[in-house]
Amino acid sequence: MTTKQRFTTALVCALAWIVIDQFTKALFKQILSPGEVVSLFAGSLLVLPTYNDGAFLSLGAHMSGAMRAAILVFGVLAILIGLVGWLLRSSRLGRVDVMAIACILGGGLSNLVDRCVYDGRVFDFLNVGIGRLRTGIFNVADIGIMLGVALLLLSSVKRKPTLPRDRNSLRI
Image (cartoon, rainbow, N blue to C red):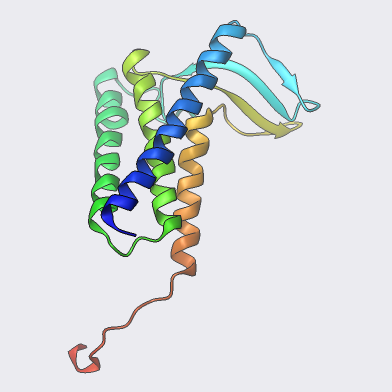
C-alpha cells in the first residue's frame, strides 16, 4: 500500500469508529438515566450508563486531576501521534496492520473527545458476562482499541522474521 492508501484507509476506518462510538454514547445518554440498568440476552449484556474518571477498568481514577490529565490526555495523545507517524512512515505495514492502527486511533480519539467534553471523564455503558464472571464497564471506543491491539498481535505472530541479506554483516 502507498502512504496515501494507508492514510486514507486508516482515516476512513478511524472516523467510522468515532462516529459509531459517539452515536452509541449519545443514544444511551438520551434513553437511560444515571443508575438505570438494562439487562439483555438473559443478563449476558448489561447496559448501565456511567462516567469513568480513569482508563481501562478505572485504572488511574484515584490519581490527582493533573496527573490523570497528563497521562490520560497527553500520554494517550502522544501514543496516537506515534501511531500516525508509524502509519505514514512504514511502507512494510500490511492491510491488517493499517486496520489495527485505525481501530486504535478511532477508539482513542473518541475517548479523548469524551475527556475534553466531560471534564476528564469517559462515558461507559456496556458490561458483558455470565453470572458473577463479568467484564468492567466499557464503550464502543474501547472495543475498537482492544480489536486494534489484538489485530496487531495476530499480525506480528503471522509475520515471518527477516534475516539480514549478507551473513557476513552479522558480528557477534
